[in-house]
Image 1 (tube, rainbow, N blue to C red):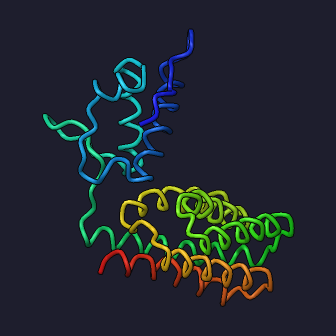
Image 2: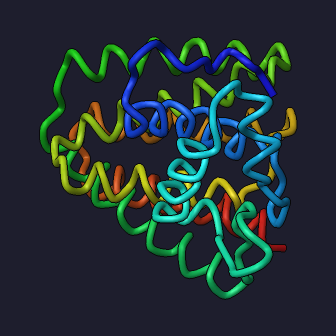
Length: 217
């Protein structure tokens, strides 16, 4: 784990806990910490160069997001999902992503669509070159921009939370899956850009369901 989280002079514990939570969230989503792995306050505090208090508060924040589980005596650990819960979570996210794509096709904000085009070009190139490390960030950027294109802040917040939690379900990308993923992204954008609400919703819903089905085989 990177050790560049350092307590600034006079910084509030609440602010520092958010910084620590952001770092731990990133590590969990990158699978540096595996589902079920213990998150020991003292060890994390030492590695991050902070006291235990902001680490404890950060773990509570992540528990509220569903990324961490805190149990008596055992302490904190990366959340694990039952097969049933994982399937239900994927179904909900797929439905919300479909609704968002429908709204994006309705609004068709040219500025945001241009940004998505740039991300698609970068992602398609990275997929062809096998640059899997770049694809994680580009995939997140694609979905962030698509959420912005939906122009519904409530829906965007719900999807962001579910996206993080379903990342505990989805498998890491391999080259073949990455290329299929970016082909699906391209088809979604084409439907959004053309204003085809029904097709955009169908493709976005199917995109999430495909990833979920592959992960839950």
